[in-house]
Structure formats: structure tokens, C-alpha cells
Length: 79
Image 1: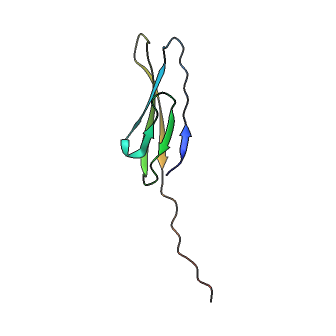
Image 2: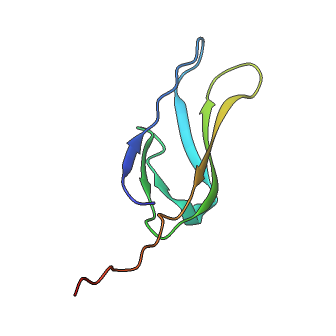
Image 3: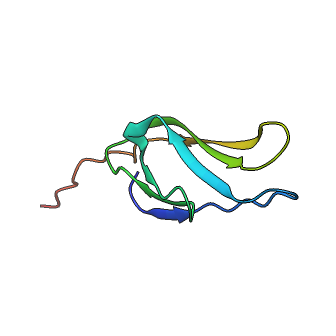
């Protein structure tokens, strides 16, 4: 977890794209730019959604991200 990633999408015949993420515990995403700031404590599955506005029918694409905790290691002591 943690860090920032930019997600981008394009759509023909739309007047703009809005980005969202679920669950909210995954972090925050800028609805205009698609820049996602991940919550470093989050683990699990998150769905990034890009919704195209102004289309005659609802138009969206989703990207599923699985976030796992980094492996934990014990210190190795040398004598």
C-alpha cells in the first residue's frame, strides 16, 4: 500500500471522464485527473472506475486492483 498512481481513460463522444474508487478505505482519487493516492494501511481489493459523461447510455470502465501487505520479516541477529 501507499504511493501515488495516475489512471487514465479515454472515451469517444463524451464530454469528460470522472474517476472514483471503492472502497473508500483504499485511498483517495482525484475525480478529474485520475491520480490515486493509496492508503498505506489498505489491503484488499479496490475498484477504480472511469465514467464517461455526456454519452447517450451509461459508459464506464473498471480496473480491479488487489493490494497485499508486504512480507514481514524478523531481524536476523549475528553474534
